[in-house]
Length: 550
Image (cartoon, rainbow, N blue to C red; front, side, top):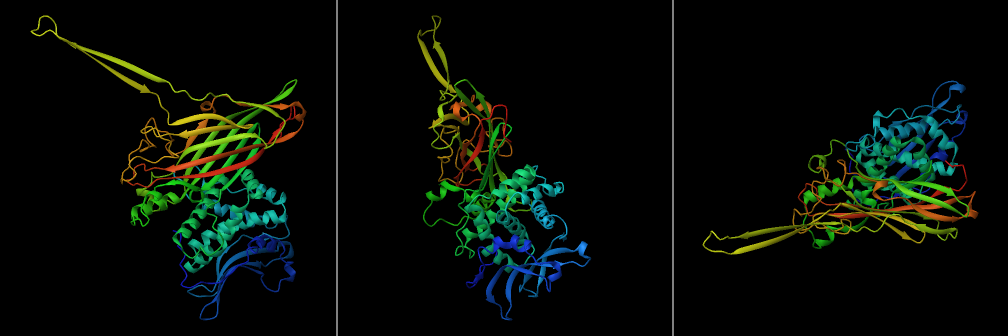
């Protein structure tokens, strides 16, 4: 269980340089020669400026210690230490690294591999997930070594800072005194996550592509869990609102790739970082009554993360007077992962309550202002739903053998309409092709992303998405995911390009808007909301006959 940081009784001055966190890796790389060490070098991560009654200052620092041995076996061990925290107030080791042999190539590679491996092993559970966590095979050092060698010191320093802060989260939140956790949440974590949310990290993208999808999921779910905790603490007001602007309205993290004739866009967004576009909170009085059950529900919903994958297949054909570029949806996979642990109290009562994808809008096309595109062709007509009309006639009457002779005819007409939960459309905006998928409530016919369940003033609103993860006609998988394959969107879309572009590698835009909604599934509550996030990136389009860039 993660400790909630204590609200300070008085404002404490946090001695922390925003840039100092960025220098952790530089400090490690610039450690002096082991022969010149008169004492163990110390890097102060964070310190409170307020001294206690005995004159000591609370701090968290990283210490480098030389191990005994010959010069050829000289090694460094790093230790995270607490200083000035009760009950002893003396220096207390909190974490110890493996040996880093300075005589070897990439001497500090074991440190980074250990940090990443421990982050994976401690990643939160997602029910029914195959993310292997601790069962994941030992992380191979070669991919991380390649990431280190392919980026500058400054770029890799930012990535190392993120990895170190994520590992420090579990140490300060679970294994340290409450005061240390409070100091961590008030200083180190907001600053580090602000770096991630303010600009994309190229090294993080390279790392995720290199280490594989299993490690990627575990790593990003840990990051999502940490962000969720920070956002919750901010909303509770535990002294964090006076610090740096929160990363709780950031677009999450996304990146794109191009390989083997496929464009891919991946994105991760912790639920509370997504922009709220509709909610039952706006329908309540200005001073709402305190609802304990709704608070527990919101707490459970906050520990969720949208995981999106968009894959488009593309092909290039070279004709006499032009170049034909074709693209089609291969897969759109949207999953809302529940980030928690099996012993969480909300799991029993709200295990089936979660956000679900309610709309996705994907666009792909040439860069803005491109003049080499001659035209865009779509392949799907606007839907014209068919209706089945059933006419039933009933005739009633009396005949001659009865005393009264009269007749009566009654005609009844019924209409049957075939409806799907999801409606797919293709559109165009300039030279960009747009693929749109919208979820509808079959009970009312309204769009879920912009609507609300019927009877929102009741504790048990009525709508057609209750028990949405069971039954043969459910609009989601049993785990709450949505898979939209190419057969739902029709054939490919196409662009005609100038022949002069042959032999070049163009930049193609790919992006998406994603909506997730919460409507009650089994719980009796009037709470609902819809959240939104947008991602956009560029991918390569190689126009080289007989050659594909990977």
